[in-house]
Image (cartoon, rainbow, N blue to C red; front, side, top):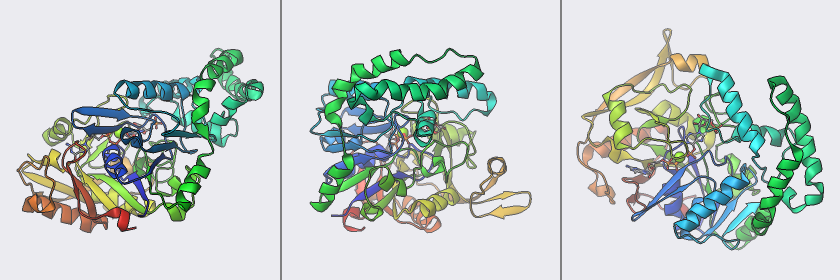
Length: 430
Ligand code: GDP
Ligand code: IMO
Ligand code: MG
């Protein structure tokens, strides 16, 4: 069986958690490779709902779950999430969870700075999750980050924190804030070091052994291509790369091991936080999508902005991220609509665009060009067979496939794990 790399092809919250969990039934290892606890992945299994932020969705099925080197890890958020999930009856131990020793940590200074910068941006804020994601990635590329492996060396930990303090204190001085207390942070870190130690190790070696033994790996992306730091709606993006290639870098495996690249794609569009979204709807249809889709953030509880499917945006995401097939999610949310629209291009100032131009100012001004189709006005909720989908829903799916250039290999009709139509066995299709 081939591996599968799961990524979001819009602005996040497409339903990656549900599909990773569904695929995990057949996989041996699940790996998170970028992002941090800014993610919120929801899994519904019978009467139980699990909300995962940092932990790979494989923990719910007790599969070996790896947090790769590309993930920024807040140790306290991690421990609290482990406790919450244990409270829901899951067993999480070093047998089933491994943390890459080279993953950078998110420290309290990072989250404090994230929030302070957002406040200073005022109206121009990005709408970050305030989790310290951006500052932690800055520390990594700035070569001053503390990594999980540093917890095993208390004798040198303080010197590393001092290096970090040198940078942050210069920044704080400019902002008129209190300098950062090195001893306090060292103590805080040492107080969790022992608990975390058994989980930390060379994840790349475990993955290489799994590869040699022919094990099946699912790589679990966070966020979506439009939030990618290079390919997204910059600067209204997250601070990591969310495309499939990132799975190789963020876990320490060759790009030839990524297998089938599955783009999780909502049947309409949502976005949380600021930034351009050409098909956003501020009308009854937008409200219907928000209400029927329960479009409120898993991590921050913020209302998600909703709009029509943007085929130009998804086609671009498919191209830059290397998507081979899509999992089409939440089609049931559109059940009551009389007609459905698909964005097939943009216009501005007498020009038409068949791609999303790069400049944020221009992206804000784009007017979508729509194609309209009749709705299906039948409940799709819980449909588990392709042949049970009504004609108009099938026509909508076929049109999305034509416009985006990829087939819907999976179709999802409710939050529940098993309400999922397998059109193609992607483990065999890489
Ligand atoms: P992720 O961040 O990509 O994992 O997505 P989230 O979990 O943040 O948001 C997706 C939401 O949609 C969750 O509440 C899921 O339970 C729910 N969901 C997933 N698939 C479907 C579906 O096919 N239909 C409906 N109605 N809800 C779904
Ligand atoms: P999942 O994995 C949706 C958004 C934030 C903000 C921007 C930058 O659940 O799909 P950050 O805190 O990362 O610096 O915020 O990115 N964002 C998400 N939006 N789903 C997510 O994750 C997101 N993670 C970050 O709202 O606009
Ligand atoms: Mg989410």
